[in-house]
Amino acid sequence: MEFREPIERLIRDPREFTRDVQFPPASKLSIYDTSLRDGEQMPGIAYTPEQKYEICKKLSDIGVHIMDVGFPAVSADERRSLQLIMQGKRKGEIRQELDVVVMCRSNAKDIDATLGALDEIGVAPSDVTFFIFTSGSDLHMKYKIGKTLLAREGKDESEWLDLPLDFYRQANVRMQCDAIRYARSKGVRYVEFGGEDGSRGDVDYFIELFRKGIEAGGTRPSWPDTVGCLTPEATRWYCQRIVEALPHDIELLNHFHNDYGLATINCITSLACGFRAFTVTANGYGERAGNVPLHQVVTALRVLYGVEIPGFKYERLQELARFMESVSGFPIEAHEPIIGANVFSHESGIHTHAMLIDRRMYEAVPADLVGAKVQFVFGKHSGLSVIESTLRKHEGRLAKAGIALDSQLSRQVLEEVKRVREERARTGRVSEIVEQYYHNMQRLGLTEDDVVQIAEGIGRKQHAAV
View 1 (cartoon, rainbow, N blue to C red):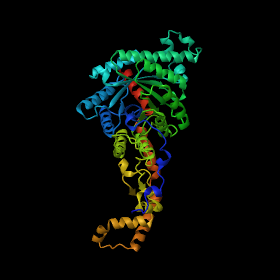
View 2: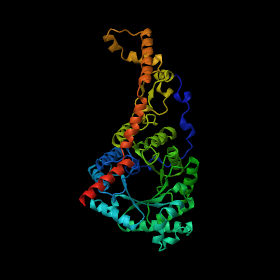
View 3: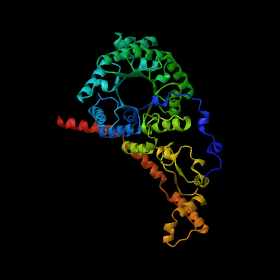
View 4: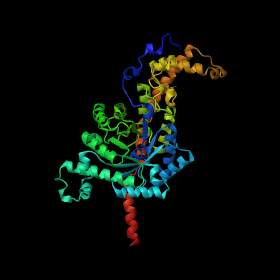
């Protein structure tokens, strides 16, 4: 239907309320995907090197800028994944400019092991970014890595609990900076760095950690909300202070988790404060409640804030979602924003009638923008107009069967649709479907009983050998 008035007169554009929000230039924003590390840390998910390569190809094609591939030093499979990805860059199957990130802890042993892993597969240290990480909150510094810091500082372990927090803070800065300098001395050109649990740490301490890390040769500070506890207000409080305290040419990276469902808005808030790189995962997979979902943040930035990431293929989001489900084994919720199987489906008679007039009646996210199609589902909530529209669409087929369309037929079809759907509800196996879903989800990983059975099997073999 063609409206007599401009659409802007009929509905308010959400960007009317966000046009004054300032972001770095869209061309300076970097999408940092951690599907191959944080995403795979979701319980039950495990990718083969070949699957990781295919995931990386998909994400490179859709337009991410940075790819975290995890810890190549920990296993042959991780090294093989990195090797395939770097070979893919050389062959042109993965974009040349994709920044590949490898991880290690803040010590020479980890850095050497990572360098050795790279050498084993023919990758130069300057071809990748090293993410050298430590802890950031006082809780983590004293009670998680405290004994490591004591040993580095030549302190006896008996002093662990009695030493003040400031001792651990300064020892942690020295450990991080020593690791950065050591990596740079070994030919590493790009060093991402930061401390876990940033959102529960002291902001002034993080500023000191970042400043000294940059002086030591670090190139990209990373500030994480490791446990997903921040509100947008707290995010703004932290991020404004960090941005104002650091050189403006430094690319600051955020890393949010979704424990309260606030990861997307926290990410956007951080960017509005001046952060330029943002961590996401495809389908939002990750530990606990997951990470910032790629589809949510890029679409919200474009539609609600008018920030379009250059070169990003928004129309591939639905396709990417289905692919990630197929390789992970984890379907996302049918009502997941933007990419859920049902978010562009309509059944209610009130909705379907309006959607037949114009999609914008009930469509805030343009379906074609994200590669989706509007569809109608028929059931107990259906109205007469959608039945009539559907029958008219197939009028030729009905005519071949000798059936003429009229209002009486449409009403009879509507009554039968409602009857069949209600009958299915009475005789359906809804609870069985749900039980099967959870049963299959548990089978993606090993249970406690599986672990004990493995131990029993090993034990019996050992006894038999004796």
